[in-house]
Image (cartoon, rainbow, N blue to C red; front, side, top):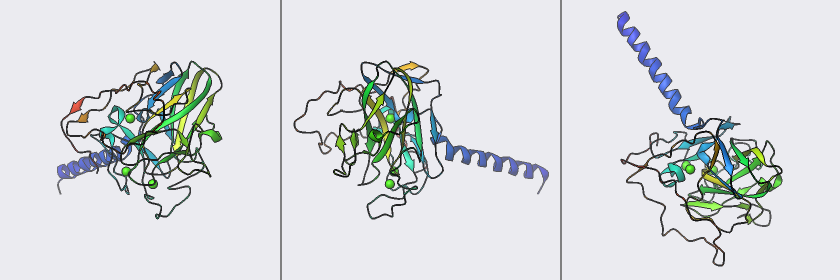
Length: 290
Ligand SMILES: [Ca+2]
Ligand SMILES: [Ca+2]
Ligand SMILES: [Ca+2]
């Protein structure tokens, strides 16, 4: 082999290696800088899950950013991504997912943990103008009876009231604010909250409870709401630059309007009108890596 061919081969090997490394790691790298600070206004703050500024505790599981154009290739993962119907055209998913059904082996500390702050922690900065008790809501997607739990914390603490966020509802994005209890495994409303002791900057955190959970957006609200529709309120920024939403392919189907209705029959719709981020439409492409 000539020296020229040897050099060329080395160059392509190096380029392929760098490309493969970027492809594996890029989806879990924060999209935003730590200078980005969201703002609570009139008792409410909403943030896209994909806008975390930091992630830690990633040894066994990690949140990966999924968009209509890119998806992590982290097997096993038994169901396809749902970013095309997510707010802002993106969500995060904690992978790999080795427990998809009740019959799959539960491995505490790996594919499940009841202890908050131990696996795959996401961090978000928020300036709160108002102190008080905030109910924590999340928008999740699950295609089975598992993959539907997280923990919430604030400023490095994981209070009991933020543990065991539990979702029900399948095959669509679902807003819930419920805590799983011994008495009710499907979760109890108005028990999932974080107390903001003083106005000012705070760090909100979410950590894994069940692997395979897909997480689109979160909301903290002083008002004990009963229901949130659609993508929910728009995020507000106190300081820093918010990335643009991801383009959604023209062929992507919106969340099915005919999905099973889970809205309580007798409730007051207290959520404000939905404010979709209205991502741009892009030519139909399939996510890479799936
Ligand atoms: Ca999945
Ligand atoms: Ca799982
Ligand atoms: Ca989102």
